[in-house]
Image 1 (cartoon, rainbow, N blue to C red):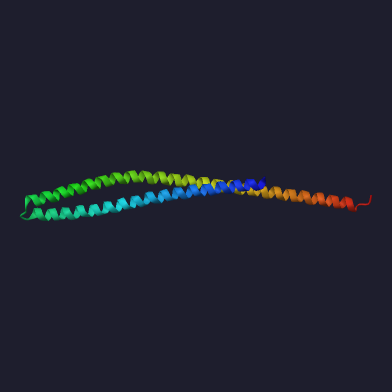
Image 2: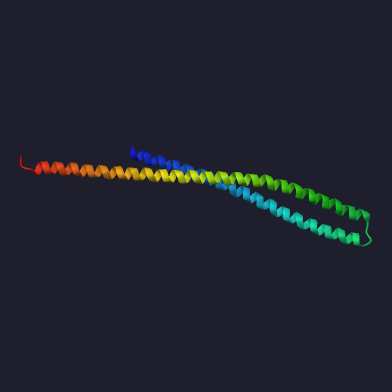
Amino acid sequence: MREKTGQVWELMLVKANRVLRQAQIELDSALGKKREVVTRQNKIDTMIVEYSDTLNGILSRAHNKAEAAHYRQFIVQLQNLRQRGSEDIQVIEQLCNEARQKTLSADQEKLKLEKLSQRSQAKITQLRKVKEVKDIEAQNLIQFNLNSPS
């Protein structure tokens, strides 16, 4: 029965490790998505600056009003994309926080199970030692009784 207890702890630890790995994968995925959105945001920011500079150059010289309107319209579209990206970052940040919490909880559960498993193993070892001592004492007593003159 004591072996079964050890096997139960091992199975629980395997499950806890699996849950922890899954939580870490989810966290890595969320962080990867966040990096992608931030990179995209940076590219959009760069484009907004470039097109704004170009528009300012067009406005500083004699220009075609339609050309300036097209640049303005494109800059507005970029700013709209920027706004949507900011909203995406907020959603992804929430996902990251949830994934971090899930990973932390899974890690704490794993650590708790490891401690409980170690305690159980220590208790089993202690009980074995006590049994061995009792067995040795019983053998010594039998030996003593066999060797003593009647």
